[in-house]
Image (cartoon, rainbow, N blue to C red; front, side, top):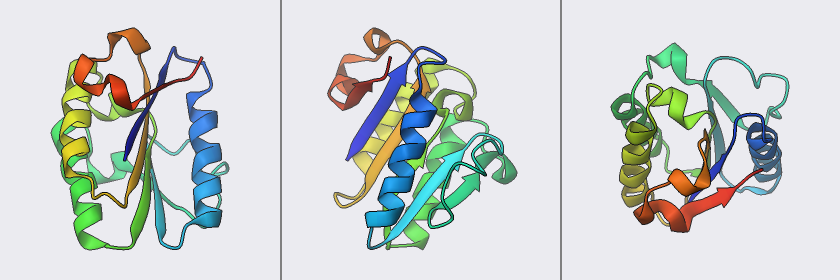
Length: 138
């Protein structure tokens, strides 16, 4: 299941995402992964979750982020939750590319995997095909 956590910059999306990562890491019977842009969440995410700096793996576009997430899913069938912070930045800074990534990953996610992606974008700018996945924050 895909959830897009969207809202203005500074509206608390990352704080909400971190709280959800930590909750999932306590309750999941599998692997919880948090993908971040840079190393900003090191002291916020509990050690039970796998924290990954996407920049260390060359993620700089929507295509590389898509391949990165697919690779994680293919390599580990125990992944139950994927959290991605700063989705637009990880997709190269373009909202349109981020929306393309979200549409592709939505079709790829196994039914038993929860995926939450934060992005600094106004909820009303989200394309119609993704509106059902939006959770506004602020």
